[in-house]
Length: 150
Image (cartoon, rainbow, N blue to C red; front, side):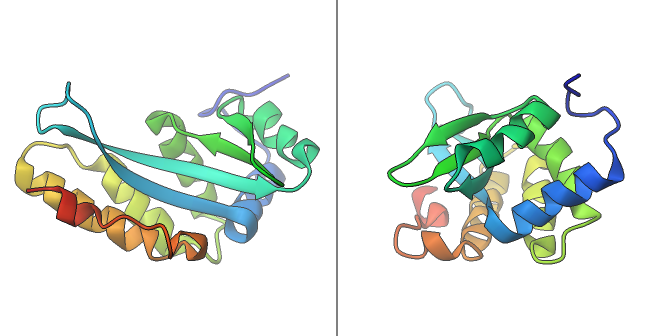
């Protein structure tokens, strides 16, 4: 039986997820232009776990019933984009994470912040830039979101 995010999971499953996130995962934040949003942008936090074998990712899809698996050139990603699901998964990982503790705190702060002004948007862009600095593979393709907000 699949458990929707927010239900109780065995402690071992929570720890397993956090370990994968620490080792083979990324917590990313993006600031995207969006015409329908009040300040012309939206802020999104995305979780991703990468593996060479798609079957290794099926456990996450089955266990948490969120996200999707995407094929890349030589790997597969389990990505979660829904902001409520991302927040819930960060809550789960926070207790067990050893490596991505700072990223989890920054991402949760981004998700909890109400986009109430242009000043807040600029602050979120700085947080998104801070979060991207932790992602080693993003170093050469990282966007400076703070410079996008005028």
